[in-house]
Image 1 (cartoon, rainbow, N blue to C red):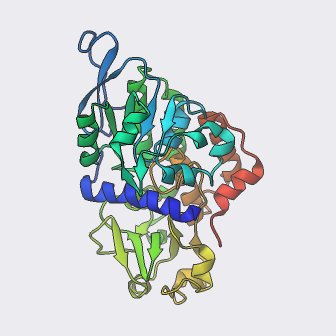
Image 2: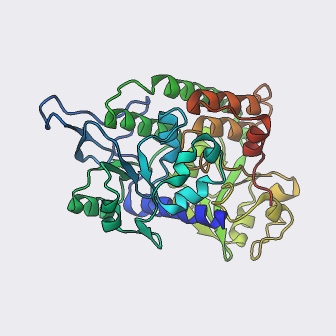
Length: 379
């Protein structure tokens, strides 16, 4: 059930991102800085400030925000990173996100997040009247979801849009920068973003040492259902960027979508060196199912990756790792070590995960918790 909840949430994220948005964040940057800006003094009343969000909208928000609701965008983990592992002022999220977070360390890290209001979503649909009843000062939403933005605008709820589009190693930093603007705390995330960028750059440097002849042909399966697998295609989207980060070739040659629907026959024709499964909850598919040929309607037993046992997955960290979230620097290293172990032989991933969670979330992971995140979903 929890896996289905997360899959539904991620489906909403990817659908909005692919259908409503472009392929890059309207206001994303390459150095960790945000294009959002506070208005000059006097641009709004003394009790409000005006910022520009990732949708390019000028949004007047309270200067002192006390009540925050979240639309269907998985920003909870980023919000926790911003607040050192706590969730102050967050009063509402969708049940799909809350349900998925129960499978992470969040209930231990920030139990208050498990008790937020979720009743402004009915069967996955936004109910603005119910949202108004919990009296949010501001709502955070997917910047590409113009339909929801118009509903918030009509209801008089200040809404700040966060873009999900672009390279996941940059998107989470842009979200942190926009939160700095929302709370008028410029520079607050400098250390965390710089630390993450150092890990990402190191991973990319290591992967770049792999020669052209040794680059792996990898296939990312984001999810599977009823004979159809959705794989990372040639169009820039989450998986496309991750394969670039890892210096891997995309086995899904010739696809024209960010998430391309394909069948087993097509995957067998591609015959990738490595298969990467989207992770707990999102994929509806496990490593064991692929290796044991037990996924109904998906016989991949003929793949060289299956024969060589080069099929991998990851568990939930703070959120599904192949989608935008603050664990992105860890993903870059996990992916690099999975594909090119020789280049990452001195990287202790368990140690790295524990140190990262301490600095980013102010949370002490046990060795077992770190290993569970890295071990991946097998059954």
